[in-house]
Amino acid sequence: MKKPSDHLFKLIKTLTKSEKRAFRLNAMAGKDAKKYVAIFDTIDNQEVYNEVAIKEKFAKEKWIGRFNAAKDYVYRALLNDLAVYNQKHEPQYQLADFLVHIRVLQSKGFYQRCTKLIEKAKALAIELGDHLKLLELLNLEGLNHPGGINPNNAEDIKKQQLGVYKMLEIEADFEALYKRTYQINSRTGYTNFDQEAIDAFDEIMVLPLLSKDKMPVTFKAKRQYINIHYFYARGKGHGKDMRYWILKAKDLFESNPQLIKQHAVNYATTLLNLQSSFLGQNQYGQAFETIELLRSFYPKNQLKKHERLTYIIEYASLHHEIITYNKMGDFEKAVQEISRLEHFLNKHEQEVSHSVTLRHYYLLALSYFGKGEFKLCKQQLNLMLELSAAGLREDLRKEAKMLMLIIWIETKKFDLLEYELRAEQRYFQRNGGINELEKLLFKMLNFACNHFSDREKALQTLTAIKEILKIQKFTPGYSEVVLWFEAELTNKTYPQLVQLRSV
Image 1 (cartoon, rainbow, N blue to C red):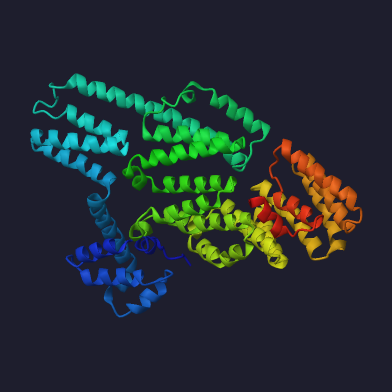
Image 2 (image 1 turned 30 degrees about the horizontal axis):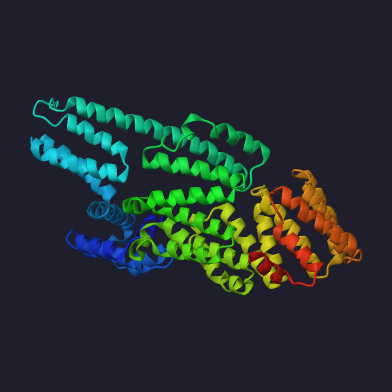
């Protein structure tokens, strides 16, 4: 049986109280208003869409046999009302409204009135950085004359048009470069670059378009210019440069409040990156302050309208908060927040990608690991490994496999550890080979199979691991595994070492 469509339900769930009120007021004035408002209210009151329950509720109504047509009518009426509502409240819709009004007035011969509207609309288009709309307005300005062509300022209009064309061309060039750099980041899992990625990025970074910060002149071009440099700094592991470009992005958005409102998701993502940057420098107070800014910058009464933004503010901000607790060694607080994080994961199921789910399971595993709840840690690692079987995020998969070997030690399954150790070594060899760091880690795991009986050699191997990590970056870096080995070979616990490292 075909599943009933829930597009009206999803749309209603994004509405603010004022948008619902506006719809009810408009709907009450129409034909069959009682029926359509009843359908709207019934769907609005549902937590999960249930069309069977709706049909049962209105079983005695004659129109229920044509319920799909009624539902479609409500959907289209709601869209029309939202269009009118947003034209009054959102600048980008107001700009579209200006264009319609100018065309109507020109068709009626009100050219002088159009001149004022065109100037007002051009100022708004420039403020919003909407150069495509600006071109439309310049075209209308060129036609704003009884003769059909405005002879008074033709050269000035042409000059402005050529300037906008040039800006749009540069915008398109930056967009193309951004897409190339994004593909490199996607392939490397948004972490440290391998040599192939470094070579590809180095070729891009010497292009003339990226040589001077004066090259991008529009908001979109500036944002992509910043994004490209940020990707490069992150891929090469240059923390200070990453912070510099994140702050540049934040300043760009905050230079104009309209830009934050218009690009709220991008601003929120910038704040997440800034929080991660503070975390990388162990600046926990500023990291938490940035999370609070993320959760408060957008009006809550309008938040439902933006599903992606709601996902970032609710799920992603809490995900980052738990990462912060883990890095501080406060695993108790991290675990306390897990049920809330799982709730948000389910709530925003449509927004959660395969990669996010992998990171979710791994974050939970690390939180349970730090708290010493190894059975729960193992459950999350198994969920992650099952989901990542297709090969997505091989870096996380390898980290999970290495951490799972530690779980066997913590749960005293030494006989199983020997078997799993051989199996995982074969897996690593088949999937990219075993690098220098991994060879040392497997050596440490072999010491663990023998209960660290040769403590001196184990300590020498730990020293070798630390030395190699000083001079070379690895992806993954296995920081939790290395720290656990250090805890086993010293008089400190794993949480204590995490807390010392965070100072």
